[in-house]
View 1 (cartoon, rainbow, N blue to C red):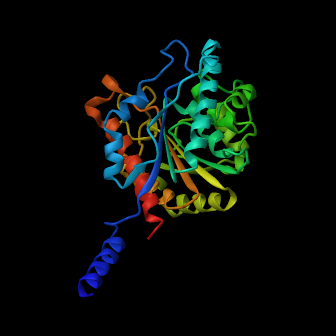
View 2 (cartoon, rainbow, N blue to C red):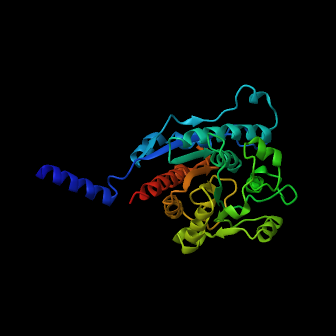
View 3 (cartoon, rainbow, N blue to C red):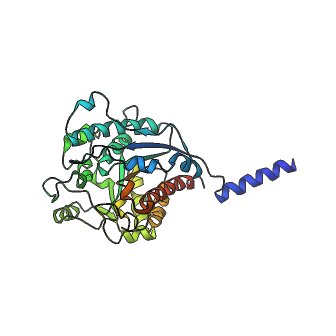
Length: 322
């Protein structure tokens, strides 16, 4: 009896100290379809992060994969279709289905994404469950750029500068619907974080729609502004997706990214904010997009930064039980 009491007391101490935290059920999905023109259709970014031994790392951080890592591809019929944007949208439809299936058994979905265009599939997978029931979804979009351009406002013409506007139903409706996001997100349920580089007309759109934001400084301090905005979003929606474009980070950690912007947070600073967000039970999905890969990743810094963020999301989910 004395030994049993001692063992029970030890388990209580371990649990309260976080050393015996609840296992986080993780679904890991790779979507390499970028939708960009004049470059290879499939990005190596998701495979590059995965190749760090991500299954083993997830287990060491207290996670457990609910199924083998999913790798999105077009089916035979879809593969006959043409157009980079269209094919990316079709891949996002498949991504959405994979998200939907994985949500049945997991409490954290992690998407390794070619770029920000792939957020459409994650959102579609969360918005409609495996029985077709619609849910209200919030988006926390963390990026140095707003990605809120429409064709009439863009200077570059890059689709990668438009995905949040597309998700909100402001442009390219066929692309959104093809990706499976039949109904757009309400602008009220989107929060931007770390944005510091906007096109002139895009900045006007931010003002016109009075978008909700938190700053780089808010990220660094996990400030009250960041906390209250995410908490308010949680009260309005059923599920929240946190999407991170790696160019939000300080260029020292993503030197190979073609769109770096000075004065970003470090991955450790952003990880602190991520841990806080994922402690909310409605924050169920993390997307890591546009990670510099291979020879573009100087000294492996970008991959380590991405891993920091994934570890932080798992730690946040574990914190729910304490």
